[in-house]
Length: 132
Image 1 (cartoon, one colour):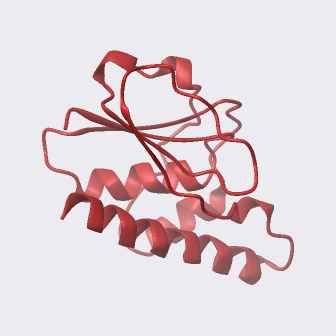
Image 2 (image 1 turned 180 degrees about the vertical axis):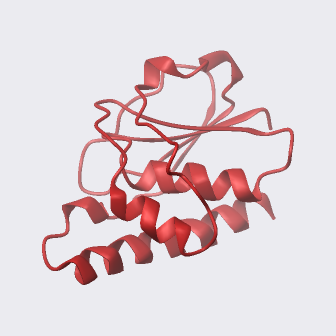
């Protein structure tokens, strides 16, 4: 495996968390990226819930899919749930892990963080299995 791209729309929550988790679990020679079709900014809740498990993504920024070196990507994992997923035009194996967008949850700070934790834990489980 040369490189894995986690892809969603805003590159603000799911894909950012996936990138951070994958970087902590991937073999040393594997490159990991995340990107979106309409990048915004990294959600503070994503930073908070990853910090809870010892992963720091505070230096991450949202990136457009056009910023990723397509020739180095051999696996694309889309994470969109309810929304339409962006397309990656490079040659790569494609997987789809449809997960709910925790950034779409309204409510108290505790309710929002809980939604981010649920997605974080599911991503951690899937990425651990992926690299096993």
